[in-house]
Amino acid sequence: MRQRFVRGALGLMAGAVAVSTVLGTSTVAAAPAHAAPGPVYSAPAEVPGVKITNTFWYSDRRVAMWVYSPAMGTNIQVQLLLARDWNYRPSNTFPQMYMLDGLRAQEDQNGWIINTNVEDFYKDKNVNVVLPVGGESSFYTDWQQPNNGKNYKWETFLTKELPPILEKQWRSTDVRGVEGLSMGGSAAMMLAARNPGFFKFAASFSGILQLSSFGMPQAVQFAVNDAGGYDASKMYGPPTDPAWKEHDPYVLADKLAGTSLYISSGNGLVGQYDTVSTIPGLATNYAGVGLEVLSRVTSQQFASRLNQLGVRAQAVYRDSGTHTWPYWQFEMEQAWPQAAGALGLAADRPACSTSGAIAPVYKANKSLGECLTPEYDVPGGRAQDFRGGRIIWSAKTGAQVVGGGIGGAYVAAGGPGGWLGFPTSGELATPDRVGRFNRFQNGNIYWTRTTGAHPVGGAIFVDWGKNGYETGPLKYPTGDEHDTPGGKGRVQDFQIGSYYWNSTNGAHSVQGKIFEKYATLGYEGGWLGFPTTNEVSLKAGGKLTAFDGGNIYWTPAKGAYAIAPGPIFDAWGKAGYENGKLGYPVSDAEPITGGTRVRFEGGSIENVNGVVTVK
Image (cartoon, rainbow, N blue to C red; front, side, top):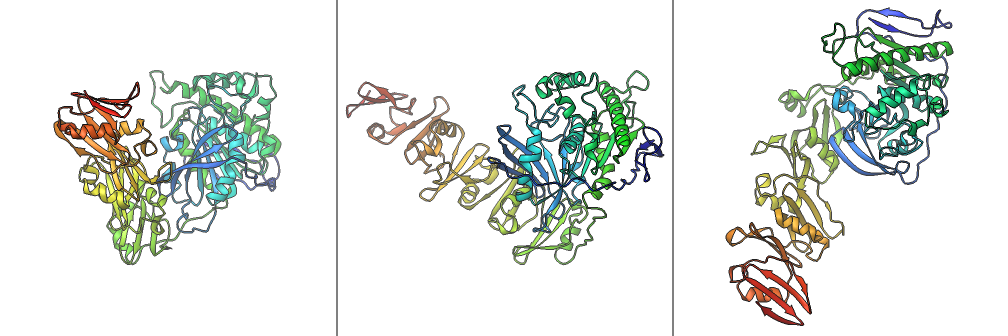
């Protein structure tokens, strides 16, 4: 059974909560029209110091960015699921949906990504989905004091620092929605109420919607201590501190007038996504039982308060279910029609089909799923987006499929208008069956589950190819090619080392233990400079890599040591280098009185006051 609460068209319905019954669990009542326009929202000004410090593309429409927050003094990861028409309509802007996590939010991924089908669900929807990462036990609020190593200022970040980035760099409008589960549901209502007009839609799925009433600060203290060892008094002070009321959705309910509201919760009883315990009617998710009961009570009280105030909302009370992710995915899907209406996206479905050169490629790749856009122009060719990837065509290369992580790396490299050019193959398996790759006009993109997707091109690609590509000594790329810190060359990281390039030496690799030694000496910024050879095999299993400023030698028995040109190196050469009686170096140059010494397997060479002695 699902129940809904709405304000009557001509006034408040009788009783604290007006209830009607809808059979089943797949029907959501249409959202009531707003009684009055919402508050006028003024876009926040850019905050000095806020900037994107890094980006990583998971696919052609899922990207992670790290944004420096001056308020928190650190980089905050935010992932975006870009609107359906992001590629198709490159000049369009799109509304936003913030998706907030629960108490146990992780530092690497938002819980919606980990635990639900949120990425696939939003692929056909014309909204930019904003997924903040991190914020364990934060309630997405500004804490009064740092705690547990965190300086939480989430309200400032989400409502002041982040919006200009999203609007000016990610083609987002100032039309926003917010929804969250548990802690995130509480925060969704709190942020919407404390920032009137900032959100057009707010949804709480199993949120705790009273924070300051008797016993609630203590309940919050227990929860945040259990989920990470936090102290709630650092958030809002002791229970008597006015800050608890200033952030309480129940107390702030009148500020939500004009915002489209969706409130849902279960009741703690065993539901379709729960496992029955040995106690009849009780789920094995014991903590989730209590939390959902608390959510149900506070959600009902919050809805009743809205009703008393004449603030329209939709409250959906499930007749079973505990505090767990499958129910929140269900509510996300059920809330979408109301959210779409509030964001101006009602009945927003594309009419698309395949034709021309793209049609037979699509027919041969049905795993791409439904088309999401019509065919559209890209620089030098045409493209079409599907649920599982893109087909990209040019007259020279034909139509090819690019998707997944490779599709993301392709976007990051500029797509069809970038340095890689057009794809010349679909996605292929690597010979070792560990990874996947696509060929492009000016290089390839390689992907594995552990390394992600990275393009390899230019002189680095040519030399890596000569040495066996991913089956060679360096294996797969782990990063993209980029400028060296000093700006004098280029570098790309691989699993077993790195490739370096500059205009003088060309492209050469440094790998294994020699690479580790190179790192201790400052890489290309140290006295060795750039490599001038790849690794060379020597006698007895030894290895050599030559550099601008010297060589590094390695043996299995003695390890890696660097030696510079000069009198000691020349004397070693006269003795036959590693093939002579001295053998391999077993030390770097060591300072001694009046000069330096290098020790070898069979002796040493000293340079004291310009006099070289072999011992």
